Length: 121
Image: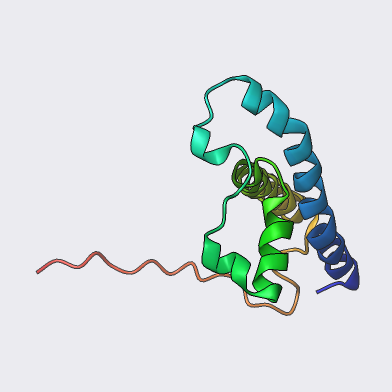
């Protein structure tokens, strides 16, 4: 595999989630404005009392609970990430088929032209 393709893949590992995060930030307000989002996905996350008793878990719970519409944002992020990954995979496949290495090199044996007889009993 060419180092160029490895570099492209490494860049895409960083770029695709960042692009999905940006699109999540852009798409969340219009989706909320439609009024079709279930109320369970909106607002701040409420944690149980036992999560707030310990110093470590209370800090984590308060940090996570400070994000508004977190569940909706996570769902939108994952859907956008899935769609972007699919589009990039299909594009990569098309480019690789068009510009990739030849199927057979001069040192490869040609494909067999032998067709087996139809089996009859």
